[in-house]
Length: 135
Length: 382
Figure 1 (tube, rainbow over the protein chains, first blue to last red):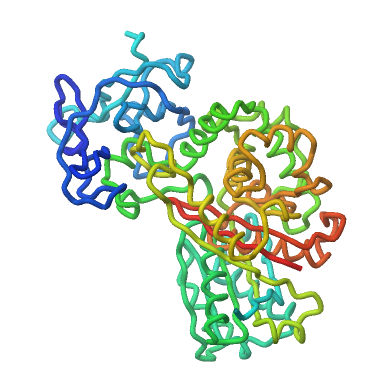
Figure 2 (figure 1 turned 30 degrees about the vertical axis):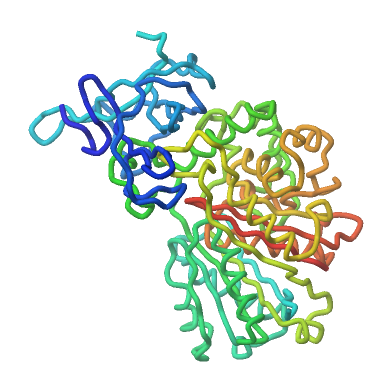
């Protein structure tokens, strides 16, 4: 499999997201950025983000977004979206699992999200979080 | 500092119009209405500012209004376009470039939710392709977080929407002119929970224009000029929760609306508690709720008791969005901020017709908020 964007992950197996930490003030960005939004520093080091956190807010995308959104080959299915607090940074993410289990404060764990087949048939993946208690 | 006054307003109705009617043509119509309201000819305008998000370059309007050689600035600041355009024109008057300025905004959006290009907002393609770059998601998620943090009920979202449609019913230029009950709003199709279809404004079409004059010209031109006491605009700070943000820092920061409102009240020399009629960005009904607090019109959590008591309806102590706001008018992005200014001006002049608030308000306030985290506010004084 290949990542939908090479900058998102530090590892696909096991899945780990890559961010950047400002050497001057410690602020963490996701994805990795070249400048610090807090102190305007330009010295940022790549870091691996925590693979679990708590749900900070969430919704469900009930209608199919316009392009550039790409629906799965089998067609659009409503999906969860949320922000997950990983401690150093709160990350926006697709959510997997039953929305009935989503609530602010729910413990969430990182997983891979299959998207569509790449040019040579290799699955293209992004990241998602799902309730840690789930399968 | 030179006083700046609103001496003429013109609105091309918002909504859905004939396919052949361009945004630019609606803009020209609004300009002509505003000039007629001010009793001025286009040739007398010494400075113009125009805003449109998707419907062309506003300065093209000189081709139909008249090639007078007037300086014309184009503004494109998302939903905050109208406020920024107004500030630009007011500053031209204060700088002595002209005594008379015209501000216009127009747009004609395609049906359905807005689509945005990741690159336009500094993101890579994955952010749009994987379905995270949808404005309505942000509104729903900011609402949920705000309601949760301040102990407010989801039903408040329906109360705000119902109030908007009651106002729209009284406004002949509104798009949505039928009252809808809170129960019907709660039970409507879910777009992004907790938001149903009637809790979100729709992209629409329309145009709005305002003529500004220096204080010494205003009295001769207009029976009841409204003073633009101050206008302020701000971008986001570290830690504020904004649309199209793949990440947030754990430390909360305040939104650009907080900064813009503080700045405008300080510059105008009035307090938020002095405001008697207000327009707040209500891209969704939750936005009206948290913008009430972000602009200082109430404290966080106080919205429940204010709205339950009807204080934000036209008959209340602090009427908000008396023309129905974005919820009842839809949002032609370039025109929306000027629609707000026009509604407040009409209220301050006693010209708001069936939706006129009682007791002759003297102090009005407008607030716009747009992607990716910008706000503009005005204080208007009768």
